[in-house]
Image 1 (cartoon, helix red, strand yellow):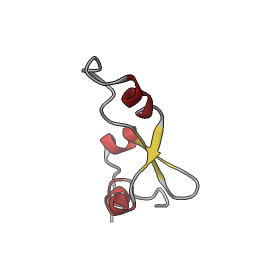
Image 2 (cartoon, rainbow, N blue to C red):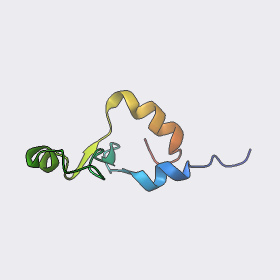
Image 3 (cartoon, one colour):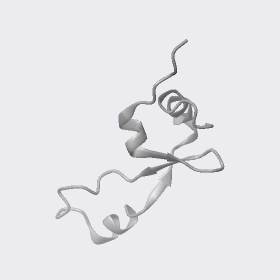
Image 4 (cartoon, one colour):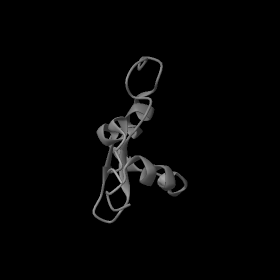
Length: 67
């Protein structure tokens, strides 16, 4: 059998942490920032973990990463 390929879009957007959780960036912080409040933009900083309900899709998109 051939090797399973990783989705190239997913490998650019997600990182697997040593504990098995997946790190992702926050959405809604790229453009149209003038109408968003400073507090809202501040809370969109940094990265968060992928929710547990999406981990099945993560393991399909990132095979062989220990998810």
